[in-house]
Length: 401
Image (cartoon, rainbow, N blue to C red; front, side):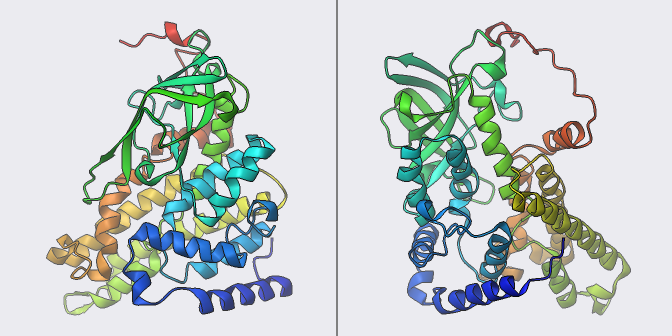
């Protein structure tokens, strides 16, 4: 695949670049807003001009752009410092699930406000007893006429405290093997019986939450897929989750490492001239290049109409540990100043310190390193599956001691 812009793509890039240059907010009033308000304002501005979720169909708020054009847009938009992560889950993971499994009525109702940023969504999957092994979840839903009653707990739910809706996988039949007894719903996060408790992190932020469900009622019309088909629906979300997370980890890249190494000194000379520092940066450059071209392979598949596949696990398996290793090494190079996380005082406005504290979580979110390695081994390389002692056993008969 030729990754140089065609004349048509070059025209699209110029159009996107020009619009961004004229419309990205730069005023102090915008910067003074809380990050979520900044994100919503910018998303609505893009939506009104036809630049939000450009790969979606026009009836859902997009412009029917090709996967290549989506990449060009992301490349151009990434040149600006703009809040974006608030919509990553809803637009990158849940919207594709709605497109694949929701009714036409639900698509028309929920996708446009998802694209415009007017409504934010979260993903209610992990539980205290079901994280890496998602199918071991214990939150249950029992049918009551045309409704379902949900009871249980979810944990590590990103953005639940500012979300309007969420998608949830629950157990609707404990009498069959664990993967077969699951169903998938969307829920109103402000419904009676939903309790959200933010989790305080090492960084001082609270990006994750515990979410408790006590007799929460959802209509059967809020189910995606058939009863018992929750595992298949959740795979759509998970494959798009790994595609959305991929190997992209913000500002922690080789260019940042190069900049730090140019500014610091070792024995009176720029750190970049030190052979050990250069070897580290070269290794990260090789990893980033591998991630870039693996991403291009996925892009090629998407441009041919394929769905995101297990190869997207490679980006996360390599990218998250690289981010952690880079942040740790750069903090060592910074010496005592590396312990300062205040944006006003720290080198590179505290990006390195935030990455250092946040990277362990990224190695868990969306599947641990070990789960990513298993997926690649079994579904990409075709190696034998690990033995499962609970295979074929009804969930309510699986030993829990």
